[in-house]
Image (cartoon, rainbow, N blue to C red):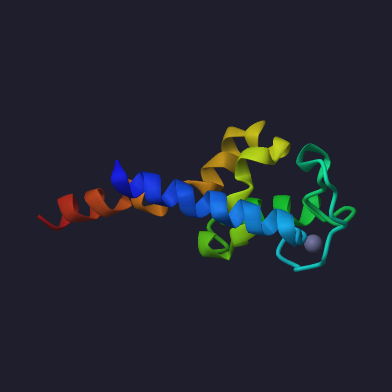
Length: 110
Ligand SMILES: [Zn+2]
């Protein structure tokens, strides 16, 4: 529980930092115009949301490791409507430690 709390605090700090210097969440690093109202802040350069979507699809297909998902996108995950709207996209962000692969591997080696 304590670890989860630390993690949450770290990601809140990351979000705050991102809002101070917003960059495109697709990973291109392109600077975004800073908007005072956080609710109206843009997350992508025009059309770049499609780039993140295609990256997430590649992660889901196993073509790209999920570590390739930009940290800024991960930090702002809760605010990305298209991710929240899709169980599949949310799965791309899931913590790899929570996957079952490790336990099943151990079972098969026994
Ligand atoms: Zn971009």
